[in-house]
Amino acid sequence: MENEKHHIVPYMTHIMVLLGLILLTVITVLITSVELGAYNTAAAMLIASLKGAVVLLYFMHLKFDHKIYWVMVSLVIAIFAAVIVVTFFDYLYR
Amino acid sequence: METVTHTHTADAHRDDTASKIGMWLFIFTEILLFGGLFIVYSVYRYMNPVAFHLAHEELSITMGFINTIILLVSSATVAISISAMQKNDRKMTMLMLAATLILAAVFLVNKYFEWGGKFEHGLYPGSDLMKSLSNGDMLFFSLYFFMTGLHGVHIIIGMVLLAITLAKVRSGRVNGGSYALLENSGLYWHLVDLIWIFLFPLFYLIH
Image 1: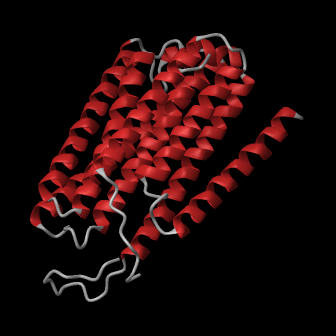
Image 2: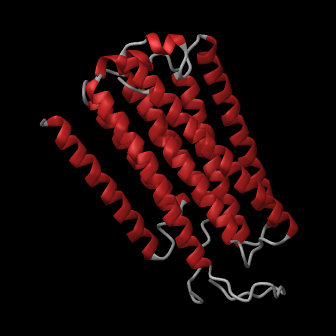
Image 3: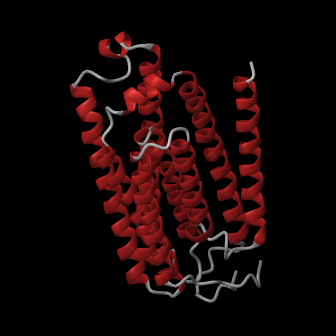
């Protein structure tokens, strides 16, 4: 692709993203140290997914690159999510 | 991609977009490999909630937390090295790649002590202690060793890739006009970070 434009991500963006990720990590550790019953795991997974999304969008450049990468990644995540749902339907209702 | 402006003639054909799509396709197979293991873990944890909770207390949250921070920082340094290369700042690129390699090595050293502590207590795959554990405990530790071990192998592969990239940046074969290798090694390194982001809460932070 000859004319694909280059987005140079500023260093500062990477550093802010890093600080955000570290903050989320601290929050996960704190949240799992208090008693929230079943919500502990849900909260931990939610934050992990959020961190994963940030890594994909910023560090892995999905936000800045050609849309096709974003579409491909979304499809794979959707397939994976479907497998999780089907597996748990099986185990929860057998 | 911008047209090649520097003066080498070896590459008659170059398609950076295709090589990046290829890298992503490979990353998808990795996501599904670890994804499958995550599902196995989830199902066994669902079936053995108490054993998993008790077994996880053997793991040090502090150690896991430090390693998480190390990987996050190393991911940022790789990301910065790519920005630096796009700005044609070779020195910064090399500095950031070297920093990443050092952080990766520190991660492995931590892992060595973590696993070493378990081994000393006789806890390793196939050990007598492991065989004497209850079903749930055994599943937890088997999955722990297998998944963090497989992740560790990925760290080593990532280090090799980044070291090769660093050498090529140094020699000028990877440069501001041609840096697909840097981008692709970077993607691989972020994947390693991405997997750890899920491994950490699943093994260290069970409540």
